[in-house]
Image 1 (cartoon, rainbow, N blue to C red):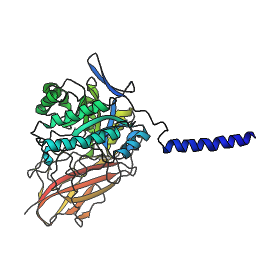
Image 2: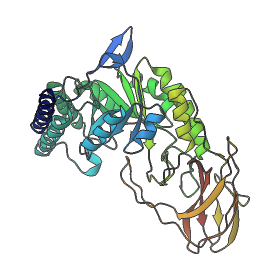
Image 3: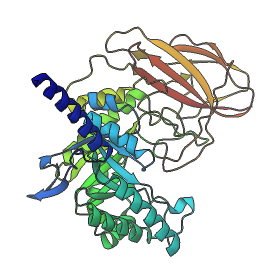
Image 4: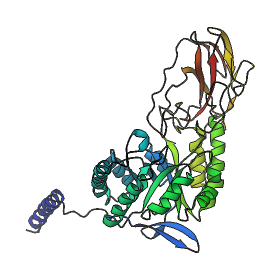
Length: 432
């Protein structure tokens, strides 16, 4: 008889669990309480009462790798696909700074249009209510770089209205907004018009070492976050005589990223509550290697090595190759490399591997990108030009110049066979 009771109890338990799950009665993971504390002039982010320093990446991919590198958070630019990203982050023990995608002036939005502002507000309210109780949520980003090329300061009234609504319905997560650099005039307006912003977030690259002084000068006295940082952007580097930017090699990027993280992020923990490295994935931004920490097939650049060492204190077992800038004939990139149509030339680089792995070289020639988007807007990758590489199996290259006059860019990738890569490129101009 006892066996019958056990069987009946088991069947009943399965039925009750299924019924409860179907009708929403099964307990859900608790929402994390995230707050900011200030003690002895020092700001600290707390999550469920425990100190939480953000070691994050601006990302929509490679979350498992981020976790392996010691990361604890991701930053998303909008709520598009947010449920999937939040769920994935939660599975891995990561948190999410979730941005609300506000329309911006440079895309034609008019913050004098009260009806348009109201429609946007109602739309974003739905997003807030939809995701405010997700256990992976860390904080809200109210707009991304709404200041970029903006002249209508009423945008900050709209930002504060949304931040105020968040505080009314979600006491568990702080609010921030992401700024392009450290725009003094916009920060002053934020101080005046956005009392409901708890944190200011700055996207900064080459200027990162000067950011704390600039924030103080602009008048923000609260905590801050670095929302994007990394190698030098195309808007910051030297250019050729015809205006093409000169990109750092992946090795140069690794060196500057280490310096910027050490001297401008972790050294400012009294006010800086963490950072999100940019870009944890593959992205075309004037070139496909400028800000990408990964190549299209997933190979990792040396910046990933730097991040892992900074976050965990331990370097990866196998590290990315090192590479020197490309040279073309006897000309320097800085002075401008001009070559004649259909003429033959030589290019070269030097590369080595910290683990003595056997290296494989790949050379490509592309049209110089004509996409001149700003603020991270999507750009199309230019086409690779076939038939110009005459001999490119090693660190030296023989190539033929394109027939058509204009700007081009030569790329080299050095693979170590262990999913690591070094990259470099050189702009050149074809001209009679």
